[in-house]
Length: 90
Image (cartoon, rainbow, N blue to C red; front, side):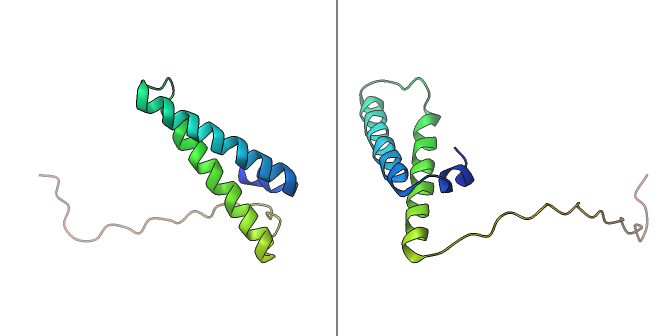
């Protein structure tokens, strides 16, 4: 789940999602201690999602708001400067 999607959730939905992910993290850690995990990267994804959700809760507690993403400006391309000095094509 992306951070923008998480920010669209209500406070109750965020807290329930945090509780759900903490349960899943506990179960994954417990299972990892007894047997190899089918998807070991899932533990990392759960940790990162938890951190994102807790950050959103903290932002809301502090009253911080993020501006809406503006339309992306097209990337500018730089021209390469000509090479200087001797060429090493021996």
